[in-house]
Image (cartoon, rainbow, N blue to C red; front, side, top):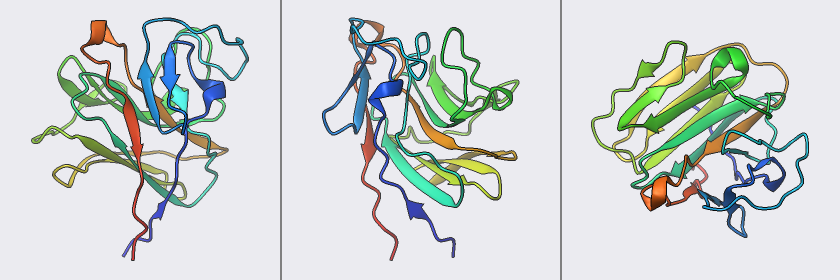
Amino acid sequence: PVTLSPVDVTLDPGTAHPNLVLSEDRKCVRHGDTRQDLPDTPERFDTCPCVLGSEGITGGRRYWEVEVGDKTGWTLGVCRESVRRKGGVRLTPGDGYWVAWLQDGGYKACTSPMTPLPVHVRPRWVGVFLDYERGEVSFYNVTDRSHLFTFTDTFSGTLRPFFNPSLNAGGTNAAPLTLCPVPAQP
């Protein structure tokens, strides 16, 4: 049996794009209509509406779950601590991102080129499992307990959980991404 270390991920406000609204407990993020007046620090994303998890991961196995609900767009996964945060961001493994997304009704892994994902039941929760030593980032549809995709790569340095609630789209995608408490395994 694989021992998972459920990680209690919280969002890092210092990395959040100025249009993102974080809950007080740093467990929910949504795209707001207005750009907040926040300092443009080197850590903060200025173009991509995303935010990183506070926890830096340098080894081991980590698992977290995100409630995506009925959102029409989102991107989730893992990125290098050192990713580019200013200007255009390419969400590919070559650029330090191992992510999956829902966009325009389609679920894809952001490989280069994109890989369509086999989604039979719309996920309301998505699980992300990182096995640092094996170089794997896997995505699961928690709703029907199916495996969606696994990236295989070689990791070095610090990785961080990655979240992008996507644009509000005039209210049609206004719901937040919510980090779920993951039960410790018996």
